[in-house]
Length: 238
Image (cartoon, rainbow, N blue to C red; front, side, top):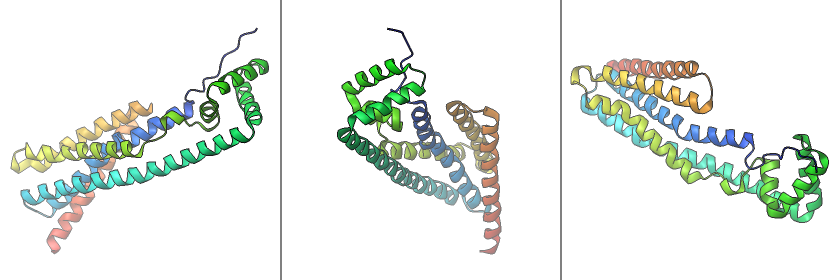
């Protein structure tokens, strides 16, 4: 029997990329949101010439509210994704029960399109389907791993924890700084943190590092600058 490459249908490349992006969004970007939004609120309140206690209270409130909001939003988003995945799996299960031979031909054709000789593709498709038809067809045709369907609770927890960690950066920096320059030390700590999250995002997403860093830093500085200006303007009018 001639040999041919057996297609990798354990987890398609698109599914691996999607999974990585989901965790990237829930983790690293959650931390980045925590850093930027908390720092922006702190700078806005500081711009209004508020006291140290008021600025710290605003920062802590921002972390608490933002973390819960992120967790709730992530839970709803991933729950919707999970429901869609389960619906697709149930639909595929019904099709397999109704017309298994047609699905076997479709799987064979997928293998042929990936470079497997037709005869070997048919043998591989039948052998793999005999072991676990739903799993094989779901992975090959839908890009869904039935054993690794998205979990909204873990995504929500990752978002909440990462937001708290990110939001703690400017707060801790202020607590550890001399009162006279605490806001500037907090700003410097935020910039360093944004550089780190930019590097991590680039590494995980396999994209150029410098553009990721520039986007993070420029966006964060813009947010802090605008809110500081708004706070300063509001502080003189209230």
